[in-house]
Amino acid sequence: MKYWWIGKITKFVLFVIAMVALFGFAVMQLWNWLIPEIFQGPTVTYWQAMGLLLLSHILVRGWHGGSGMGWKSHRWKHRMEEKLAAMTPEEREKFKEEWRRRCGHYPGDEKKES
Image (cartoon, rainbow, N blue to C red):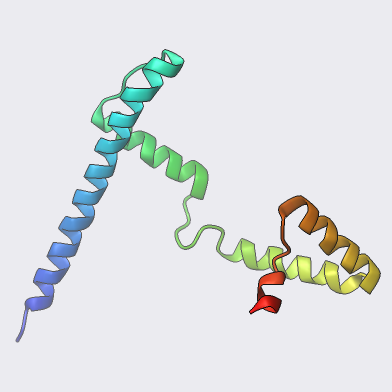
């Protein structure tokens, strides 16, 4: 039997560990370079920087994995489509114009241009 895939998996795992370690080191260096000078805050150790990375991940993305919001984005999209469907054509166009005014574009505009 060929066991070449074990070597590939091992290399991938080692690469991921190295990248996480490097990212933690970069966070530590940036924190210690910026925070004490700008905000007179404390310096952090490597493990504190890794803890900050984990904490920021939990606060920003939550415990779930995947691509950000997951099912919530589908629910938001479904609710928005329901609201738009319940509007009259004049209300819908007014809504889209307000969206364009505030955001610079409307999400459906890209599909029409292509």
